[in-house]
Length: 308
View 1: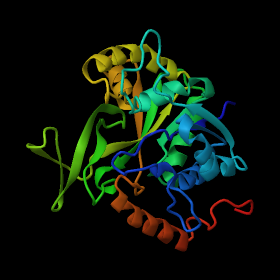
View 2: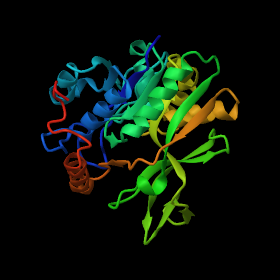
View 3: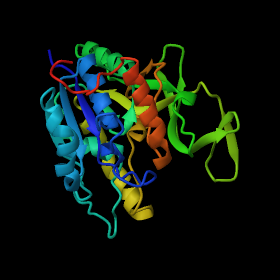
Protein backbone atom coordinates (compact mmCIF):
# COMPACT_ATOMS: atom_id res chain seq x y z
CA UNK A 1 0.00 0.00 0.00
CA UNK A 2 1.17 3.53 -0.81
CA UNK A 3 1.39 5.33 2.51
CA UNK A 4 0.36 9.00 2.77
CA UNK A 5 3.11 11.61 2.88
CA UNK A 6 3.32 15.05 4.47
CA UNK A 7 4.04 18.20 2.46
CA UNK A 8 5.23 21.28 4.38
CA UNK A 9 5.00 24.77 2.88
CA UNK A 10 7.99 26.63 4.32
CA UNK A 11 8.83 29.18 1.62
CA UNK A 12 6.73 32.10 2.93
CA UNK A 13 8.29 35.45 3.76
CA UNK A 14 6.60 36.16 7.11
CA UNK A 15 5.81 39.78 6.21
CA UNK A 16 3.58 40.39 9.25
CA UNK A 17 6.01 38.63 11.56
CA UNK A 18 9.08 40.40 10.24
CA UNK A 19 11.31 37.41 9.58
CA UNK A 20 11.65 33.69 8.91
CA UNK A 21 9.17 32.52 11.53
CA UNK A 22 9.25 28.96 10.20
CA UNK A 23 12.75 28.55 11.73
CA UNK A 24 12.36 30.76 14.82
CA UNK A 25 12.90 28.85 18.07
CA UNK A 26 9.96 28.53 20.47
CA UNK A 27 10.62 25.29 22.38
CA UNK A 28 12.69 24.79 25.57
CA UNK A 29 15.53 23.14 23.63
CA UNK A 30 15.40 25.50 20.66
CA UNK A 31 12.65 23.63 18.80
CA UNK A 32 10.66 25.50 16.14
CA UNK A 33 6.88 25.14 15.77
CA UNK A 34 7.43 22.82 12.81
CA UNK A 35 9.28 20.37 15.06
CA UNK A 36 6.07 19.76 17.00
CA UNK A 37 4.01 19.33 13.82
CA UNK A 38 6.52 16.80 12.48
CA UNK A 39 6.59 14.97 15.79
CA UNK A 40 2.78 14.73 15.82
CA UNK A 41 2.67 13.75 12.14
CA UNK A 42 5.17 10.96 12.70
CA UNK A 43 3.17 9.65 15.66
CA UNK A 44 0.04 9.75 13.50
CA UNK A 45 1.69 7.53 10.85
CA UNK A 46 3.45 9.81 8.35
CA UNK A 47 6.90 8.47 7.45
CA UNK A 48 7.88 10.80 4.58
CA UNK A 49 7.99 14.60 4.52
CA UNK A 50 8.48 16.98 1.59
CA UNK A 51 9.74 20.43 2.55
CA UNK A 52 8.92 23.22 0.11
CA UNK A 53 11.46 26.00 0.68
CA UNK A 54 13.16 28.87 -1.07
CA UNK A 55 16.66 28.10 -2.39
CA UNK A 56 18.19 30.94 -0.37
CA UNK A 57 17.12 29.42 2.98
CA UNK A 58 18.14 25.83 2.14
CA UNK A 59 21.29 25.79 4.26
CA UNK A 60 19.80 27.34 7.40
CA UNK A 61 16.58 25.30 7.07
CA UNK A 62 18.57 22.07 6.93
CA UNK A 63 20.61 23.16 9.95
CA UNK A 64 17.54 24.09 12.01
CA UNK A 65 15.12 21.34 10.90
CA UNK A 66 15.86 19.07 7.98
CA UNK A 67 19.10 17.37 9.01
CA UNK A 68 17.71 16.40 12.41
CA UNK A 69 14.40 15.11 11.03
CA UNK A 70 16.30 12.88 8.62
CA UNK A 71 17.00 10.49 11.50
CA UNK A 72 13.27 9.93 12.00
CA UNK A 73 11.53 10.42 8.63
CA UNK A 74 12.39 10.22 4.95
CA UNK A 75 13.08 13.83 3.92
CA UNK A 76 12.62 15.30 0.46
CA UNK A 77 13.01 18.88 -0.74
CA UNK A 78 11.22 20.96 -3.35
CA UNK A 79 11.98 24.57 -4.20
CA UNK A 80 9.44 27.32 -4.74
CA UNK A 81 11.19 29.83 -6.96
CA UNK A 82 9.64 32.98 -8.36
CA UNK A 83 10.87 32.08 -11.83
CA UNK A 84 9.38 28.57 -11.81
CA UNK A 85 6.37 29.23 -14.02
CA UNK A 86 4.69 27.36 -16.87
CA UNK A 87 5.38 28.53 -20.41
CA UNK A 88 5.06 31.18 -21.69
CA UNK A 89 4.82 33.16 -18.44
CA UNK A 90 7.78 35.11 -17.08
CA UNK A 91 8.50 36.81 -13.77
CA UNK A 92 7.26 40.43 -13.71
CA UNK A 93 9.96 43.04 -12.97
CA UNK A 94 10.49 43.80 -9.25
CA UNK A 95 8.36 40.82 -8.08
CA UNK A 96 9.70 39.47 -4.73
CA UNK A 97 6.65 37.85 -3.12
CA UNK A 98 6.08 34.08 -3.57
CA UNK A 99 3.18 33.09 -5.83
CA UNK A 100 1.10 31.48 -3.07
CA UNK A 101 0.26 28.09 -1.61
CA UNK A 102 -1.16 26.53 -4.79
CA UNK A 103 2.00 27.47 -6.67
CA UNK A 104 4.07 25.98 -3.82
CA UNK A 105 2.39 22.57 -4.12
CA UNK A 106 2.67 22.75 -7.92
CA UNK A 107 6.43 23.28 -7.53
CA UNK A 108 6.64 20.09 -5.45
CA UNK A 109 4.87 17.87 -7.99
CA UNK A 110 7.94 15.74 -8.76
CA UNK A 111 8.32 14.86 -5.07
CA UNK A 112 4.66 13.92 -4.53
CA UNK A 113 4.00 10.27 -5.32
CA UNK A 114 1.27 9.37 -2.82
CA UNK A 115 -1.85 10.83 -1.21
CA UNK A 116 -0.63 13.75 0.83
CA UNK A 117 -1.43 16.14 3.64
CA UNK A 118 -0.19 19.69 3.25
CA UNK A 119 0.47 22.15 6.09
CA UNK A 120 2.01 25.52 6.85
CA UNK A 121 5.44 25.35 8.47
CA UNK A 122 4.65 27.98 11.10
CA UNK A 123 1.34 26.66 12.51
CA UNK A 124 0.75 24.36 15.49
CA UNK A 125 -2.03 21.94 14.55
CA UNK A 126 -2.08 19.33 17.33
CA UNK A 127 -1.80 15.53 17.20
CA UNK A 128 -5.50 14.83 16.66
CA UNK A 129 -5.50 16.88 13.46
CA UNK A 130 -2.69 14.80 11.94
CA UNK A 131 -4.25 11.53 13.06
CA UNK A 132 -7.60 12.44 11.53
CA UNK A 133 -5.91 13.33 8.25
CA UNK A 134 -3.58 10.34 8.09
CA UNK A 135 -6.39 7.87 8.74
CA UNK A 136 -8.54 9.55 6.10
CA UNK A 137 -5.79 9.52 3.47
CA UNK A 138 -4.85 5.94 4.18
CA UNK A 139 -8.48 4.86 3.73
CA UNK A 140 -8.79 6.93 0.55
CA UNK A 141 -6.08 4.98 -1.29
CA UNK A 142 -8.66 2.43 -2.40
CA UNK A 143 -11.32 5.02 -3.22
CA UNK A 144 -11.94 6.01 -6.84
CA UNK A 145 -13.95 9.10 -5.95
CA UNK A 146 -12.34 12.53 -6.37
CA UNK A 147 -12.63 13.40 -2.70
CA UNK A 148 -10.37 15.71 -0.72
CA UNK A 149 -10.21 16.43 3.00
CA UNK A 150 -9.68 19.44 5.21
CA UNK A 151 -9.18 19.62 8.96
CA UNK A 152 -11.63 22.21 10.28
CA UNK A 153 -10.98 24.29 13.38
CA UNK A 154 -13.35 26.41 15.42
CA UNK A 155 -12.65 30.07 14.64
CA UNK A 156 -12.24 31.26 18.22
CA UNK A 157 -9.55 28.59 18.73
CA UNK A 158 -7.41 30.08 15.97
CA UNK A 159 -7.37 33.81 16.69
CA UNK A 160 -4.47 36.09 17.60
CA UNK A 161 -4.80 38.64 20.38
CA UNK A 162 -2.29 40.89 18.64
CA UNK A 163 -4.00 41.83 15.40
CA UNK A 164 -5.94 40.71 12.37
CA UNK A 165 -5.58 37.23 10.85
CA UNK A 166 -6.47 35.58 7.54
CA UNK A 167 -8.85 32.64 7.65
CA UNK A 168 -10.92 30.58 5.26
CA UNK A 169 -14.49 30.73 6.58
CA UNK A 170 -16.26 27.47 5.72
CA UNK A 171 -19.83 26.42 5.06
CA UNK A 172 -20.30 22.73 5.87
CA UNK A 173 -23.34 20.55 5.21
CA UNK A 174 -24.93 17.97 7.54
CA UNK A 175 -22.74 15.21 6.15
CA UNK A 176 -19.60 17.22 6.91
CA UNK A 177 -18.79 18.09 3.31
CA UNK A 178 -17.46 21.51 2.42
CA UNK A 179 -19.96 23.65 0.52
CA UNK A 180 -18.06 26.93 0.26
CA UNK A 181 -14.90 28.53 1.58
CA UNK A 182 -14.56 32.30 1.80
CA UNK A 183 -11.10 33.79 2.30
CA UNK A 184 -11.06 36.79 4.63
CA UNK A 185 -7.75 38.52 5.24
CA UNK A 186 -8.72 40.85 8.11
CA UNK A 187 -10.47 39.01 10.94
CA UNK A 188 -9.99 40.20 14.51
CA UNK A 189 -11.39 40.37 18.02
CA UNK A 190 -13.60 43.34 18.87
CA UNK A 191 -14.34 43.28 22.61
CA UNK A 192 -15.86 39.79 23.03
CA UNK A 193 -16.90 39.41 19.38
CA UNK A 194 -15.09 38.35 16.23
CA UNK A 195 -15.57 40.36 13.07
CA UNK A 196 -14.03 40.91 9.64
CA UNK A 197 -13.82 43.70 7.09
CA UNK A 198 -13.15 43.72 3.37
CA UNK A 199 -12.72 47.46 2.97
CA UNK A 200 -11.47 48.62 6.38
CA UNK A 201 -14.70 50.51 7.02
CA UNK A 202 -17.62 48.09 7.14
CA UNK A 203 -17.42 45.25 9.66
CA UNK A 204 -19.28 41.93 9.75
CA UNK A 205 -19.73 39.81 12.88
CA UNK A 206 -18.74 36.14 12.66
CA UNK A 207 -19.92 33.35 14.97
CA UNK A 208 -17.08 32.17 17.17
CA UNK A 209 -17.80 28.51 16.36
CA UNK A 210 -17.54 29.01 12.59
CA UNK A 211 -15.42 26.27 11.01
CA UNK A 212 -12.26 27.62 9.41
CA UNK A 213 -9.47 26.21 7.29
CA UNK A 214 -5.93 26.48 8.63
CA UNK A 215 -4.36 25.03 5.49
CA UNK A 216 -4.29 21.42 6.65
CA UNK A 217 -5.55 19.77 3.49
CA UNK A 218 -5.54 16.21 2.17
CA UNK A 219 -5.29 15.48 -1.55
CA UNK A 220 -4.71 12.56 -3.92
CA UNK A 221 -1.25 12.26 -5.48
CA UNK A 222 -2.35 13.77 -8.80
CA UNK A 223 -3.61 17.04 -7.28
CA UNK A 224 -0.61 19.07 -8.59
CA UNK A 225 -1.92 18.28 -12.08
CA UNK A 226 -5.25 19.84 -11.06
CA UNK A 227 -3.39 23.00 -10.05
CA UNK A 228 -1.60 22.94 -13.38
CA UNK A 229 -4.94 23.13 -15.19
CA UNK A 230 -5.76 26.46 -13.56
CA UNK A 231 -2.36 28.04 -12.98
CA UNK A 232 -2.04 29.64 -16.40
CA UNK A 233 -5.37 31.46 -16.11
CA UNK A 234 -4.35 32.78 -12.68
CA UNK A 235 -1.01 34.04 -13.97
CA UNK A 236 -2.71 35.71 -16.92
CA UNK A 237 -4.84 37.76 -14.53
CA UNK A 238 -2.20 38.36 -11.86
CA UNK A 239 0.56 39.52 -14.19
CA UNK A 240 -1.86 41.97 -15.77
CA UNK A 241 -3.65 43.32 -12.69
CA UNK A 242 -1.48 42.60 -9.62
CA UNK A 243 2.03 41.67 -10.80
CA UNK A 244 3.84 42.30 -7.52
CA UNK A 245 1.47 40.72 -4.98
CA UNK A 246 -1.02 38.42 -6.72
CA UNK A 247 -1.06 34.96 -5.08
CA UNK A 248 -2.73 31.67 -5.98
CA UNK A 249 -4.08 29.85 -2.92
CA UNK A 250 -5.03 26.21 -2.41
CA UNK A 251 -8.60 27.17 -1.39
CA UNK A 252 -8.97 28.96 -4.73
CA UNK A 253 -8.29 25.69 -6.57
CA UNK A 254 -10.65 23.75 -4.31
CA UNK A 255 -13.38 26.38 -4.63
CA UNK A 256 -13.21 26.24 -8.41
CA UNK A 257 -13.63 22.45 -8.38
CA UNK A 258 -16.48 22.62 -5.88
CA UNK A 259 -18.38 25.09 -8.04
CA UNK A 260 -18.01 22.82 -11.06
CA UNK A 261 -18.87 19.64 -9.09
CA UNK A 262 -15.45 18.21 -9.87
CA UNK A 263 -14.59 17.24 -6.31
CA UNK A 264 -15.92 16.82 -2.78
CA UNK A 265 -14.13 17.86 0.41
CA UNK A 266 -14.67 15.99 3.65
CA UNK A 267 -14.32 18.29 6.66
CA UNK A 268 -12.59 16.55 9.56
CA UNK A 269 -13.53 18.67 12.56
CA UNK A 270 -11.07 18.89 15.41
CA UNK A 271 -11.29 20.49 18.85
CA UNK A 272 -7.53 21.10 18.90
CA UNK A 273 -6.26 24.54 19.85
CA UNK A 274 -4.40 26.02 16.90
CA UNK A 275 -1.71 28.58 17.56
CA UNK A 276 1.00 30.29 15.58
CA UNK A 277 3.18 33.35 15.29
CA UNK A 278 1.39 35.71 12.95
CA UNK A 279 2.96 38.68 14.74
CA UNK A 280 6.20 39.09 16.71
CA UNK A 281 4.06 39.72 19.78
CA UNK A 282 2.59 36.21 19.46
CA UNK A 283 5.93 34.52 20.17
CA UNK A 284 5.93 34.74 24.01
CA UNK A 285 2.42 33.26 24.14
CA UNK A 286 3.43 30.40 21.83
CA UNK A 287 6.50 29.73 23.97
CA UNK A 288 4.29 29.65 27.07
CA UNK A 289 1.84 27.22 25.46
CA UNK A 290 4.64 24.91 24.32
CA UNK A 291 6.18 24.98 27.78
CA UNK A 292 2.82 24.05 29.34
CA UNK A 293 2.42 21.12 26.93
CA UNK A 294 5.92 19.92 27.80
CA UNK A 295 5.26 20.30 31.54
CA UNK A 296 2.04 18.30 31.17
CA UNK A 297 3.88 15.46 29.45
CA UNK A 298 2.31 15.96 26.02
CA UNK A 299 5.78 16.38 24.48
CA UNK A 300 9.18 15.23 25.72
CA UNK A 301 12.12 17.59 26.06
CA UNK A 302 14.30 17.41 24.13
CA UNK A 303 11.68 16.59 21.52
CA UNK A 304 13.79 14.52 19.14
CA UNK A 305 15.52 11.60 20.79
CA UNK A 306 15.97 8.00 19.68
CA UNK A 307 14.47 7.07 23.06
CA UNK A 308 11.17 8.89 22.40
